[in-house]
Length: 114
Image 1 (cartoon, rainbow, N blue to C red):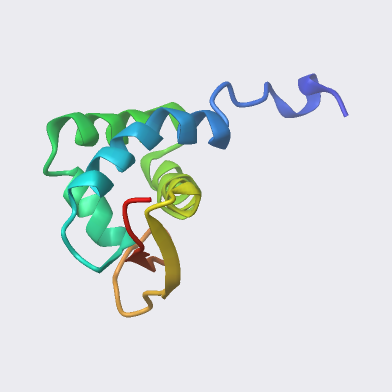
Image 2 (cartoon, rainbow, N blue to C red; image 1 turned 90 degrees about the horizontal axis):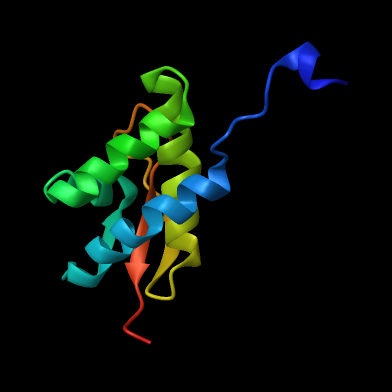
């Protein structure tokens, strides 16, 4: 199948977005003082930090689709992957009672400063 049939590949794939946003997520993780948090709580915390908020909005923009579709990728793939890669937190289950219109949020447990 040719590129001409389906259009060009996305310039910014999920891996590129992860690489771009990870330092900002790591910065928030370095400042949290809770034992557990949800993905939604992390995204809310990002909105209180001007640099992290700008990086989040830029990540959504770089995906290149409409806002809802872009946020589905950022909330459902980019941020969870960054968290799974972090040596400071581990996945602690889905947070079904937490509302996120873009993805099923998860609980994350802080595991230390190793």
